[in-house]
Image (cartoon, rainbow, N blue to C red; front, side, top):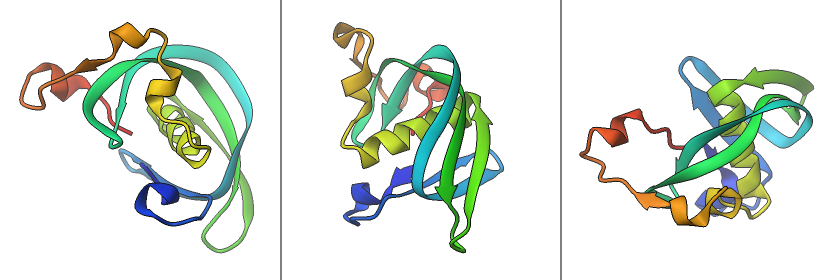
Length: 121
């Protein structure tokens, strides 16, 4: 995923892709959450750094699509995590601001076997 402000655009726009699910969300707002899950999270803001972040397991997001229509979308698991991560970027928050334990932030060599199981948003 990527937020527009990460590439120098002053828009409230995120683009997220998980497997075959690809979304462009304009003015996204999470309107409902359910459950919580802790997982290691990383991002392009700090390449190869990861740490435990708690996120809602299921969300409902309200946004505008690329044709200007309002819509709501339910998401869960990795897609829900990625949407929350990218909305945080729009609000000036990076994943390290949400670490459960700052001491748990760690560098992972991208060539290591550990790196292949980690997700980057």
